[in-house]
Image (cartoon, rainbow, N blue to C red; front, side):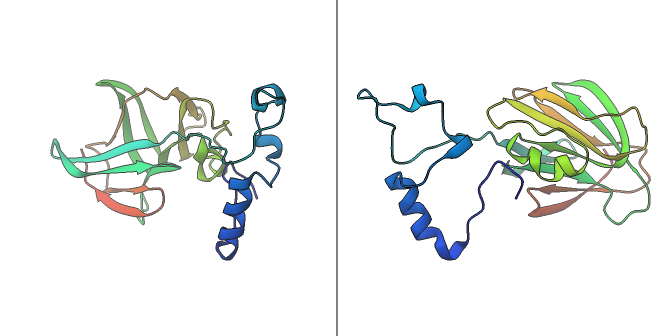
Length: 184
C-alpha cells in the first residue's frame, strides 16, 4: 500500500491493461498538471501513460576481474553480513576515491523507485521517482553518526568488502540473486 508502483491482481491484468490503454481509469496524483496533459483541442489525453524509471547497473568483481553477468536493478542492491554474527566492514568508492567506510549489518543502494521499500524501512528517505538520485542507506549502522545519503544518479559507486572483515558478505540484487562476496 506504500510505494511508487501500483499493485495489481494478476487475475485482473487484462482488464487493468485495457482500462489504461483506453484511458478509462483516472490517473489521480500521478497525472501531469492539467495544462501539460491537455491536447491541442483542450481535451485531456487518454491512452497509455508512461513514467520512465531509473535502474542501477551492477556487476560483481572478483580478484580484480568483472564477472560477465550484469544486473539491472529497479529497487535496490543490498550488501549484508548474511548469517555471520559480525558486522560488515564495507568501503564505498566513487570513481576511484574513497567516500566512506561503514560498519553495519549492511548497506543498500536504492533507486528512487525502491526508496519506499527496504530503504525506507532501514531509515532512508522517500524520494520521488522523477528525482535523479541514488540512495545510500546503512542497515543498522554501528555508529549513530552515519546517516543515509542521497547521491546524484551519475555517481559510479564501488562497494568493497574490507580486507580486515572477520567473515564474508553477501550481495543481493532486487531480492532475487544472492551471492557470497569474499574480502577485498
